[in-house]
Image (cartoon, rainbow, N blue to C red; front, side, top):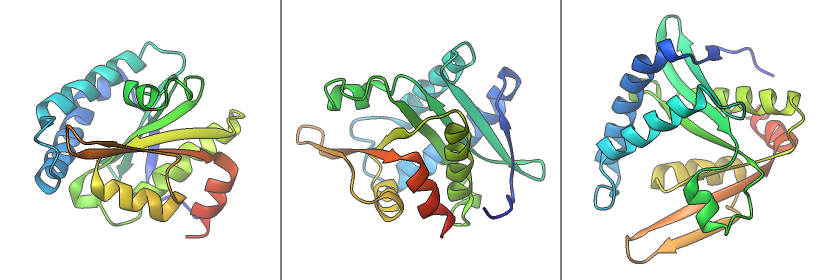
Length: 185
């Protein structure tokens, strides 16, 4: 494995405001680039994510991590069980017992520099050490779909919402083979 360029640690309640700021910048930039404003506002997305973060602080099955380059927050990543409501709904609860990787946010000024892959390697290694063999993750963001396809192949579930005009993609991946694939990059 390549040497990490980031310092990554588990987030605490004291990090909530730093995370909120990082997420707001990232969500706002994504909403400006994507056509998802029609069915969700950036404020709603941020409120939803902050609620998830606060719930994770008391959950034995969820962890959020914050990454820094020097003292600058670069990004976040998390894992939790059960997966989010969208994954459960779109899969008919099929993935209910699976761990979801989520909240991979990289601050706009740090995007396209490999930090997202570095955070994925971190979380996959963390989960592998805990004996987790398979994980899931999802997105409705078009630019993220392209990245996930390039890194992990086609999604296990692809649900088109004709009413809302977007597709929801859900990946189910083997942790060990995903690590091998990412480490070769």
